[in-house]
Amino acid sequence: MATRNVVILGSGCSGLTAAIYCGRAGLRPLVVEGRESGGQLSLTTLVENFPGFPEGIQGPQLIENMRMQAANFGAEFASGDVIEAHLGTRPIALRLEDADKDAEPIYTESLIIASGARARWLDLTSEQALIGHGVSSCATCDGFFFRDKDIIVVGGGDSAMEEALVLTRFASTVTIVHRRDEFRASKIMLDRAREHPKIKWVTNAQIVEVMDVGKKEVTAVKLQSTNNGRAPWVMPISAVFLGIGHVPNTQAFTGQLPADADGYLLTRDYVHTQHAGVFASGDVADRRYRQAITAAGTGCMAAIEVEKYLAHHHG
Image (cartoon, rainbow, N blue to C red):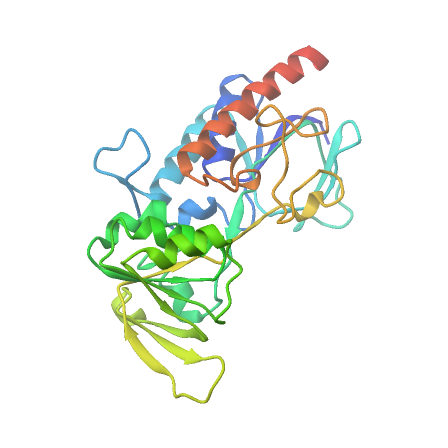
């Protein structure tokens, strides 16, 4: 199998932006789309904060537009996730999960890891059915749609406190639901949340159902006590935001690339990793912003760095 100039792992905003730039540079990038093609944006409905769309755009449509744009510049696509990567070899060797065990690996001179991060969910059937219809993991992205509504945030760490505080800009009330009555959040974040007049608290409880799947909108949640025999009860609500963190998709690189305690890749000079020719962009290395536009920006940076790397090493 011929060695590629560049392989891009991930087909969200970061990966597809990188593919557009690499394609325009004549590098014919291969985009490995991942198990969740399109990343988290493909689960979003209306996107109003991506520049250039004054009326907003549906998340899946934005991803499809970017994919077509990348394809127009010569990007090629492969499905599946990378399950094995040898970053210290030259060329870099990658193996996909769906590949025949006897198939040759994909070889590439450079690599952009833009595999993103997935939100932690409650794994309820009703919750999954209502993602993008009142269930969200991004207050900054979706809080605006629930102006003057009553909202729930699930979680007890800093992520939940941050989500709740953001949502107070829009909601009438924000109720933090937590399984325990003790919180993992830092004192400063917990104090800020406790002092906010719009934030309420339901502790020692968990959501067991999100309603109403049939209407394709959130109208209430069913709660269950975690420490006594109280019967489950229903709480009317307009949206559920998950604040229990994200999991970066970095499993294939464990032990090969430095990461923080939660698995986010650590980079230098924005997108460089410790391996020459290997770059990381988007949510896989960004635990702070996690926005479509910031992911696209670092995808652009990674592509430019790939072009420089290939020109210098393989001119």
